Length: 209
Image (cartoon, rainbow, N blue to C red; front, side, top):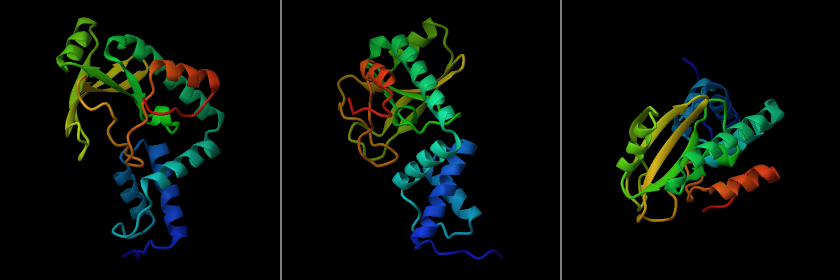
């Protein structure tokens, strides 16, 4: 039986962060907890110990992409963000915002474009997609302890080479964003104008909106 090492050692935490980042980048695992547990198992580490924080994972992921992808990562982000502009034009009536890894700069090949829309009822978005013959799947997206509510409809779309996850929030609901899975603070949200400025300047992220 493999020995299960304790992971209080900061060097071991760094190894765990690096392996978790590699799993996210190369295997397309999006859930941080699942990726951490997978990394702990591969390294023979007790997953009940002090695993790296999501912020440590995000930094390791950025380091991994910079080291192994370089200019390819920049081209991927430019492609995803340009695709996000197209989708924001499509959903211009819903006060659309870009969120997630494509905005933060850590998106991978398997990462969908994540958008937040605002509508007085989710059925408006359903009708909008049906009228344009855009196929979709719908699930409920949950953010525990978010005061705006625990569940929101999320539409999953495939438009050519663009994959998107579009979450719909009520127009009259709380205007602050739900918590980011990385640091727990309100998600960064970028308007179309902010995204255009970011693409023009080459910036890696923008403030909240």
